[in-house]
Image 1 (cartoon, rainbow, N blue to C red):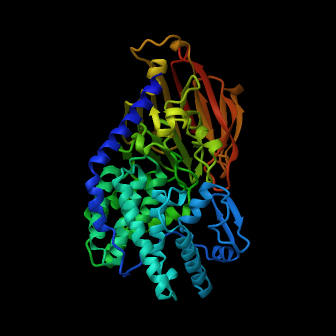
Image 2 (tube, rainbow, N blue to C red):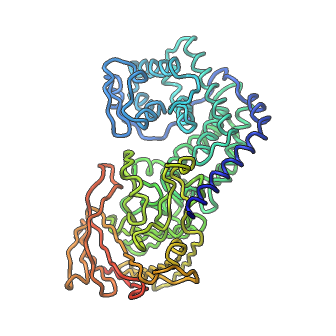
Image 3 (cartoon, rainbow, N blue to C red):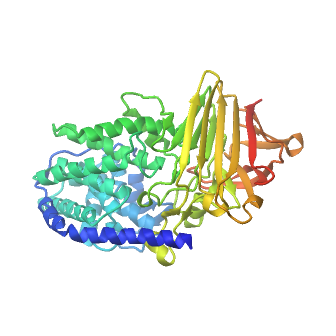
Length: 561
């Protein structure tokens, strides 16, 4: 019943937002002044994403691979064949793959790019209620058209050039309308970036440039937190945004225009925050929607970090902590779920953590799959898929399912921790983080407290997990079962010791660690690791089970042998 009330409240909020959009209708009319067709393009921003020229040969042969699906068009236009999935189609119509054709640097690749772009414009160039005209896909397509315009327009005749310019104007008008209609979440910032970039690249788009810069400043102010994290708390969003913001910063310089200070400050703050999430092997910690690390993308972004800033250790606004000593790294989620409009990828992983040593990952969260897998998505968001404590097999946060009224807020967090506190302490002997959350208060009348201490040499970690009763009276709360789950990276070998009261964990470099938990039995259960680019992999997890009344607190240790 409580969840129903929360869903109703979210829907009511959307209704209020719709009413506000009606009041802002005159602004939609004003936005038409910024919807000109460009006269010509003056600059082309650099696409800093990595390229693979061999993909150009596959595309010329009619093979298009997106979202884990491969299609052979057999000479047909890829825009005419039935798509194997919506994500395949949006991958195709984002045109991000044009960079591979440009990398091929051949007349054939240029002609192929121009033909495919012209084909899409002819068939789908007018906004419609189709997946390729979702706001974020349209923004991504506009960014691709701008950055790859030298490829597309090389050798083009006057008619194609004019059609291409009109297409840019159509995208500009469409994206401005989406923003005026109340577009939410990360897509809103992507649209602002695309509009600002078009205004800089094109002649005769001064109003668009001014409006785009204003939108960009507003969204960066709203979405980038003071410590450099993104409002969604998703590390992947940081990577994707920096891949767009860095070329935009260069575009301002190329036009001889001062980049907004908000843009420069945002990039400077985001770099050390991105480093906070990196393990020693270069992979990113798996929190709140982060999937397999595109190591080349992260390395590319960090190559633009002139300051070479050290990883941020304390990120109170984003809700993350990093403990690093010797060769050992612990990264911990100490934050509440993000606001609903940014929560569609968020996980119920409050107080979960990951550990690595000498470039090898030890304890992990399950992450999300590289390719969209609806059957795994909800399971991956659950608390049980994290190195965390779970009470009564219930997640600490709940999500709208997409059924009934929930479909209006599908995927958003509708209930979860509202009071999350963290304290950090450091001295010459140890690093320590102590945090708590109230995600189990309403259902069990319990507060979860977790303390993790790392020795100054990184060779010993001690944790304490405690469940504290609140004033809320919940029948049977004291009899609730709970479990500590420690998911292991697939490269870790595990064997039991001390009659099942300890586990020896061996890393690929043969470093051995001993794990104990208050003398209680440790079970080895199956798990699945979704954070690898090779796809889901079977792995193990250590599970320590107890009852609240008998063991309200558990102490566990991880020590290098």
